[in-house]
Length: 404
Ligand code: MLT
Image (cartoon, rainbow, N blue to C red; front, side, top):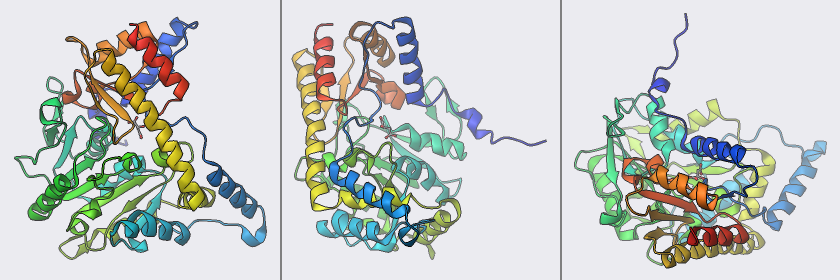
């Protein structure tokens, strides 16, 4: 008789955004006349930029001719894309990242869930609290997190680094020593970030203690302040302790196209064992490459035209962020984030729990957001709104919230 992976049975509830979706659908079924505005999951709404669409059209035509047809993509990604990434995302910023340290994938969500496979089951992870749920859930599935305590909503073998109003949402170096440290900066869900000198402290700490930092930089394009690092490799010594994950979803609207990459530096080793070689081996076995058409689309992100168009798209969403931030403040709410990230993190009013406020907002403003407690126990009493809506919907949502 077969046996299942029991670790899956340990997962409490369903995936956060599935629960939000289910509750929203139930409300819509009960109130079909209401016009719901969704500012919950961080899904983009603006169309793919013209330079990228043109590149995809060209790639589609190539696929229709025997001479230019492409079958399986190279395991690590096409050279044309990896060299554009190395040049523009790294060397242009003074980071010495080589093409063979870049692994093109179908998105940062998959990478952030899969990367833990490189590490032994007894490794102890540290996560910010609140946190993007994928980091913890993927480690639960792998059996690395110990026992779940429903009363504290915490796993016995996970080190939590609370990021709350009182510490300015800045994760503090943990007292117990972790083996793997997940950092997402600019942060999802709080929409806040840390300065480069603070990130350097994490890099020094990881090198000192022999930990690896899994650095999720999905929201890098939204950084507006000068002294914030766009890549962890801007910090001295990061190549011996950090893996960086990047997404094309948020900076270029690829949530439906799917493209991302991981940087695993060759210097990152456990004794003589190279993590770069391990990830290459894993990619070779488990992944057949992102589609050629999508990788050509990715290349166009780095073209002059593409960059100019995407700068405007990011500015469009950041205009929404300002509308939400300022609108909520004017309505008397306590608000964070939205300066270097497309998320606004607010305190729920009074003593409302995150889910109570979710219901209140859905019921009275017909606006869907994300309850902070869904991201971890320290998210209780907070609520997240995304800036990825259209201008019209964002403004309408704010008007509704103000008049609640
Ligand atoms: C979010 O809303 O937190 C993100 O969109 C989820 C994701 O990127 O997978």
